[in-house]
Image (cartoon, rainbow, N blue to C red; front, side, top):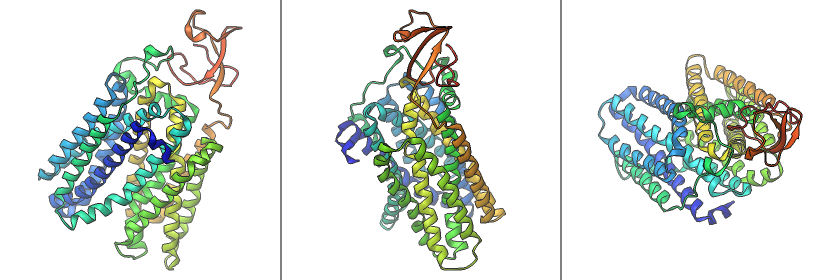
Length: 460
């Protein structure tokens, strides 16, 4: 897996990602302490609102950035996003009103919504070979999981030496280092419409903002990915929102066991991320991702048993096992996602496609996070497990139905409206009603709908 780090450009970009993630983790801890200083006992409400603002920024900003990403130098977009985050991190220690927290959180997360999809769209150009790209996706998944374990520990260590305000300085330094690493990397030139006769749909910034979403709703495997995002969001919401409730209230354990439980989730995810590159060399993305989604349902069933049990020391071990299984199943779905998007989007539309995935997946979390918290607090953990488990099951079954078992890249199809001299028809043969040929099929300006069968496609 580490062989991809021999590529100097990818090494610099991966290092930038890791350092930025550490900075984000430090900011998360510092923001919680800042909220307590500003709002006191209402800190939980402030953080809940800040989380909602974060998700809204992701959902609203990412598609807009995806629409203009091809008009901006990618290096400038990435570095500019990092520098905005540096500025926000340096301003946060000086806020003394709740509304200021909300404004700065929105700006910070808007910059992240610009950075992350753009970064994700660059990697397929840096590592065009699918084997290398798969290993890069696994490394990225490991980076996220390690950050969730390392950043809190680092923050705890630093807080024993400095006040929490200095954590924001550490965050700023991390984003500044990320920007420097991006500047030092030689980024490949993106594919543009001038280099290919197959382009993404046009229509101005407003129209292009919906290009990625239209790609998702038109491509069968990406429609399935929408459902898979919801299944993952249901599981991650239970872990993120209710871990502390399970550990402290339901099991009556100490606060120190909360990070242990969260660590079990990260360990399960990392274990799968390490194994997947070799698995995906032999097993299809569809098999791995749908298996992960259906595994989530089985874990929810087991968690229901743990939740229903009122006593027993075994419940702690069972909870750790459930959290590890949740992490493994989520990683089975999330790790191959980049491969799926690269396979389904035209080269000129990758920025829009990754932005759409970023936005639509966070829209799922915007739904499941409040559901997990509200149901757990008002109706009890069991009802939260039932509701989110049912959501995961329905989403998994929907993905199974939406994703055809036969899903080739190359699809024979008929063009009925192109002139015979069009360059796209160079390899096509005359057929009744138009011109027929076969190639890797993606939705773009020449292919606006998906073929109903491999033998026939609506003409364009």
